[in-house]
Image (cartoon, rainbow, N blue to C red; front, top):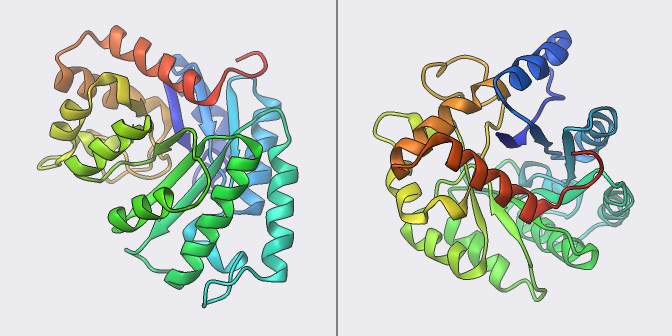
Amino acid sequence: MIDSHVHLNRSEFGAEASEVLTRARAQGVTGFLNVGYDLQTSRESITLAQNNPDILATVGIHPHDALMLADENGRITADGTRALQTLEELAADQRVVAIGEIGLDYYRDLSPRPAQKAALQAQLALADRLELPVVFHVRDAWPETLEQIDQCGVPIRKGVLHSFSGDAAAVAWARDRGFLLGIGGPVTYKNSRLPELVALAGVDMILLETDAPWLPPVPYRGKRNESAYLVHTLEKAAEILDMDIAEVDRITTESFFRLFGRPGAM
């Protein structure tokens, strides 16, 4: 199994971070993609990846922090230009395999929407220039995000829609563009729409993720999530798809490396 979206550097893990990794590896997790969401966590992700051959990193500015790049009217600021230059420098590290997580979040709306759109567009342009795939964060902004991607003016070659919560139309959109869907703990929740969307997408379109320390699967709902719990998402996906667990594991792992590559010793 590969945890395709995790935040191992979060303070929720604290001094227990090494034990979290040990427990995950004991459960069969063979790789982790540690995802940055601002400059500091991007740096921390790189450090983790440099110190652990089974960890890879991403760098990016989350929509919550879009004002780091753009003003409330959607204009890239001088500080934003410098932040983008820093992101580009960080992305040059051989352990960095994607730009992200980036996108739109209209649920919390912690940054003005024009700033969110400008930050997304600027980072899509960066991903295109560096020829890196993109990890997308989308919440309550599915039509707007997909429109932004289609209208960004650069070819976004590859990407994953992290913590997928879209609908059948979003599945079709992703299939047409060769994008993958990040499926995590919510697929195990009662009354979730995700099982039918996973069935619609099929095993070739999904990646397994935890988004730890958030979104734990049943039976850990309400507790801190960690990568060792990824097995419950794998088992649920296999049940939905009526497939052998080992086969779902194999295919999703192959999809991960097809999207992000296999740098270093991983």
